[in-house]
Amino acid sequence: MAKLTGGQALARSLKTHGVDTIFGLPGVQLDWFFDGLYDLQQKGEIKIYHTRHEQATTYMADGYARTTGKPGVAVMVPGPGLLNGMAGLSTAYSCSSPVLSISGQIRSNLIGKGRGELHEIPYQLEMMKSVTKWASRAMKPDEVPGMVHEAFKQMLSGHVRPVHIEVPPDVLQAEAEMDLFSMPEIERVKPDPDKIEKAAEALGKAERPIIYVGGGILRAEAWDELKDLAEMLEAPVIMSANGKGSISARHHLGHSMLSGFDLTPKSDAVLVVGTRFVQPANSDWGPGEGQTVIQMDIDEEEIGRNYKPDVGVVSDAKVGLAALAERTAKHNRSRESRKDELEALKAQQEDLLFEIQPQASYAQAIREVLPEDGIVVNESTQVGYFSAVGFPVYHPRTFIGSGYQGTLGYGFATALGAQVGNPDKKVVSINGDGGFYYNVQELSTMAKFNNNLIAIVFNDGAYGNVKRIQQQSFNGRTIASDLYNPEVAKTAEAFGVQGIKAEGPDGLKNAMEEAMKSDAPTLIEVPVGEMPGMWHLVRRGQRT
View (cartoon, rainbow, N blue to C red):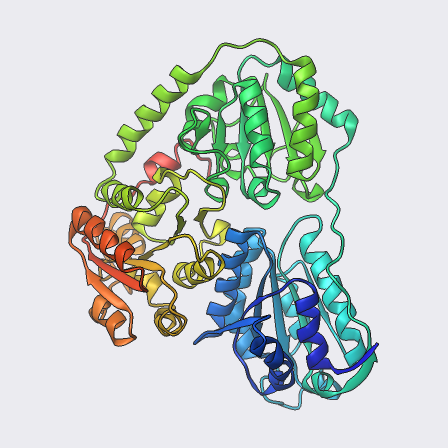
């Protein structure tokens, strides 16, 4: 046992749980924690990336977590600091990302008294339960190590999601004798053998099976097991935006959601793994009579949430798919290759997508320059909406979106975190001018830490999607959707970041090549006009 302050216990407990990177902002309630981090940072054991706004701490932690598979850690002061960080936590929650949120509190003896202490808000811990899987508070210094240990256990077991812990400042300062804990053993959830057998028999006997996957494949690192099963069944794999990269877009079985419109009605067995299955379940082309639906998810509550399956399997995707492939092989029928059929379908979709201009040409320019293992972080902007469906992804964990939160402004800061976690890969951030200016101040963070991200800002001087909807739905009347921006590239230069202005897809391609050669923090501004929507393609047959 060692005598430690609560702040030292918190800092050292993070280290014993494998944390070497923290995204955070200091403040008076956290002084004793940051003092506990000082020696660890001096020794190079933990690096702290301090941002200019708390929102960026949680976004960076999320980008780091989803591209590395390791927990991301965000630290902020209580009250307004924590409220600032909640948008990032809500995004991480919707995308099942392992983010540990750490905050301070007011003094322990004043919690709930409503005396107006600095940063005091009522029910802070209860508030955090709306954007995390689990939340807890340590009221004594010797409670800190066990709380951290439990936080990692809760975060990484079962349905992976963010968790939150908080420690009052007097507890961070107080000393006590205590032991530290190391990372808990996390057991993968194993499937019921009888249900695997039932699912395997249905898939093995099917003539035209199909597989739907989402982010659960990437979280479980189940891409090899998925590929093995898909190839055995000659089953096309329909990937949600969160599941892009689960199987390479170059593989004839790797498909975007667009393929679901054509393939699902013709399939006799549908396997759903690690996805909420919202769009197919709520479309007139989704599964129906005569089709066997099998759903596999690590979270029992997700089974049947959007569509009641014939067979529901609660399991970790990696373990479950391996077991399913083993049993399916014993039932599997002979099938002809569907390569010609599926590649023809892909070609047809590429023609449809290429009509969405200029988005298709801008996405193509990015793909031609970005290495195959490069990472794209998407945004709520026109090129981003296109990329969620039309951008080819070849490797797991190389395409990041905001899930069902659709969090405008998350992308730039999230991409900074992805670049921190992947220093040997190139990360590209796709932004509109509306979303980018939510976190424009993090250009300072980009410059300070020499984060060699390539951030692209498509500048149309508007909240473009909102403006187009207003024009189409309200007889051309628009309100509160036009923006005034400074020159974006010059803004980057003012922060010490390389700023490039590029005209058109060819100009973007040239600017990206220049940024790749310089390998320096770079922002590329691309002036654009109004762009057409693509919802007529992606929402075909959707029931309201």
